[in-house]
Length: 282
Image (cartoon, rainbow, N blue to C red):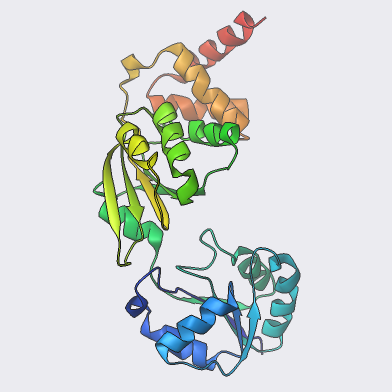
């Protein structure tokens, strides 16, 4: 009999948001793997729970080494509970490696749903929520950050990002540069905590606001790109979109086909534009 891996959501701020099952799982698990064992101790004290099982750390620095150990525990029949500092494991937090390894060994994986900064910020942003993309943290280096933003410059779905407070002003300025200063966005700070704040407005205004300094846990929600009519898209833009897709790993044939559908233009037009651009470059 194999065990079971349980991914448990933890409060992102207000401790009373903890799902009722979290206390049960913390008390009953054979092994509790925590991103930060000190934070886990504070959580269990607040919930009035004493874990009966073994508590181990599971964070970015030891994730690769500890995953095989936990998989062996699971294979031996243990119930392993994975918790991170806030929100759901695997969402910009440790967890993916363990889930993938457990699935590979045919170990059952389930979850205790809990608070999510992604969905909370999205719902509070005032921006469209019917379709969205979660982009996690942007690269720290300016050039890589701009490159990542350019990849989604034409994305029409609402975009959600996590960001460190000391990098927020640079990130918002980069977004304003790539997406346009008038693109709407919302900066969600300290969600569900005492000093929760939702700052909404155009990216240029938010970048100026953030330049004064911002503290706390940050989630940024950005409006998707406006839809362009086919007549507004010139050949240079079509070529740019193909290049973005190629740089992301798509083959040229597939990139051309995808851009044609996306732009609402004949595939032959995109193909001809790419050929001309290549010829012009010599």
